[in-house]
Image 1 (tube, helix red, strand yellow):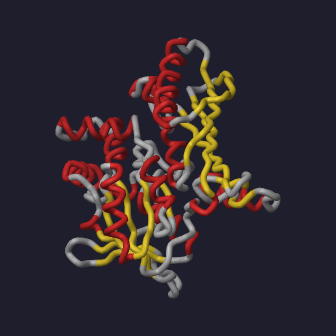
Image 2 (tube, rainbow, N blue to C red):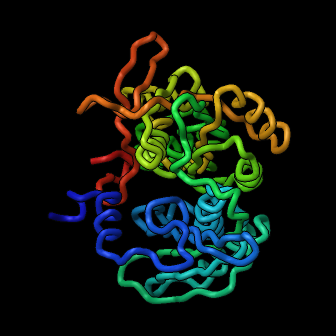
Image 3 (tube, rainbow, N blue to C red):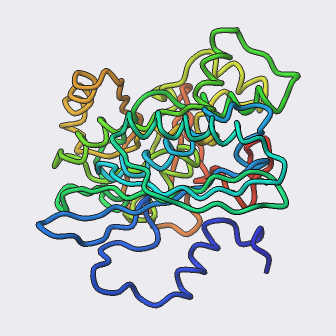
Length: 349
């Protein structure tokens, strides 16, 4: 069996089975947005790492070195935010091809520094190696949290509401506009989509508020697409879900571009990935108040997009269903971006 046949998450599970059981001090190991490691005084460390690889995650000619630095750090910040934590320290490993101008590294670190200062993170070291291919930027990050406030993918309960911050699908639209020159969008929306693609925002303030709230059950960030990341919550929580297409926070520009590019106006929002919004669950009766709290404290809108259902009992029944605006209900495959199966247009092969 090859790794592309296994897929990213199948390979992760294979690796997890090959390792011994986590030792003392490991509260959560492989399988969530972060590893959770015991610290003193009721605190925990949140550990995560993520990489940006030229030709897979970015094209060097299409993004500035500064924006690449900002994005590389932001996607790690987002993992800490999704667990309700506060980012603290980062280590940066670089793979650099021969002949790369030193000014590229200057710009990269200008972006890293800008994002780190905004988040209150210290960059404390790393590693540099040469590569025979393109640039890669690999970041390891440590955050901290109160142990009682850590949010994982496993806390959703039937009857909960499903909520999401911000808007969906814009980064995927930006990727489509980059890789498919026959596509077009209005200038204002095209600029927004490029910004969401190249300089995502980690929802740190929102994550800290949600971490502190006892109402929040499960939480993750949307890196692989809403369908895929909601599928992770359903799997870890042992539940199903219903998503209301009419409630998805998707702009008209995004829907029009998705319709033109993929024949489905919800495609980018459901399957695109790299939104780095927070996806979380809360009791239905408290969802509106929680959404207002986040909006009032941070200015970030929060949408209630569906509900958590009991676990699927019938073999072959869909774990997630999508209720379309015309009232029809269709299965929503919990598929999103898979690094080992995806093509460069952001779709699963």
